[in-house]
Length: 483
Image (cartoon, rainbow, N blue to C red; front, side, top):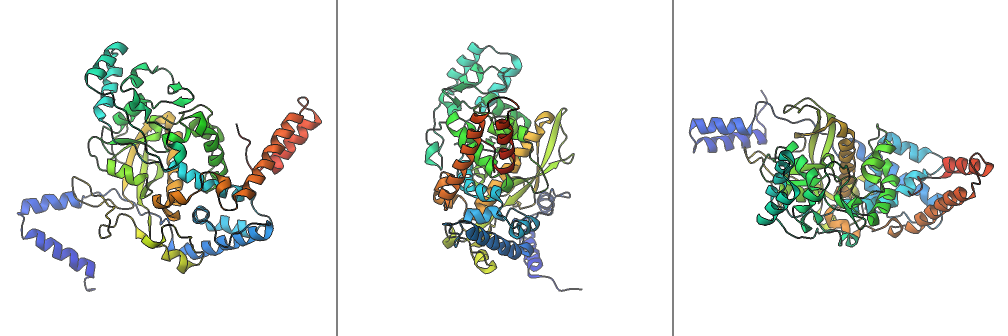
């Protein structure tokens, strides 16, 4: 029989200390809670797999060297850390193809400068929690058919009118008010519930508190992780990305340019679904219950700081009973890589030793200070990478919610590897502000000129000019033209 490991000895010692100050019934009850018979946990895949990392870094270095050889005035001697983090999302086969191909993949090359602005746009600081009773009353109002005037009087008498601003990382979002509170309960009552679009005023969408109420009801008014009361209702892909016409254009372009970095390698993206869900020209199209989830307020804050993320494992019949007409998604909790304190804003090396020196384990370690870890309130057991949770969504909205989690997962992984929330101020606000961004701007300008010039030259359907423009666009244009 093998001798006990140091961990086993430590565990036995801890149990003996606990047994010495508790009666047998308390010991049994605590052990049953802390070590449940059926733990909802699944073996996770490492975000930075040790057996692949050295090969990936070598291929990424070769790809950047090829880009330097291909283009004049391009300096990739120290590639931006978010570029390296984005390239690590590709599997080895994809990286090998990019390196061995005689040509530079322009979709990848033009997509890289869009990564920084995309991350910066997505990692918005969460809104301060609001009293959930205001939203609960919306459900009651909807169910009982209370008149608009009655609801307004009740909201006013309950003193639900508040005003606050949403704090943002990017300065361009400073004018993005948390408008669901600017007019209290009127948002719900003045909104036509039969309409699928949020109310829009001066080109800006107001938050739809009825959608928030639906999510609270679906998640049973509790955090889906901790099961605690009074949760924050959080957007999976932030509300700010398409809340106004001023933001939509950039978001559309950045999301489409970077699609190769955030879509799963084995999946394809439905362009129509992407447009209907996140890149429509109409503000607020993603302010829906399928783009929301209820979380403990501390988890909400850390989620926005790229401390952890949800990996969607698809639909399942596991866990709690599924409601009629609804599907259930299986989510795996992951603590993200933790950058070393003195390397938060430093470039990432492309040798294994240099790269690994930039990290110091993962968040979620209770022995590391400052503490970024959480326990289940009912048991005291730590929340770990690999823990499984479930969220329900109407079956018709299932593809949209899966897409939201897919975007969220990729953005948080890239952000965490690139330095987390602490490094956001070093990311560019726009692709042309990135390193080698002027090269990007020139290519995009050429692509737009070719597209719009060809489009203007079309004299009539079926004309030779139209055919040439179509052929050129399909063969040479690296991205879809802006809407």
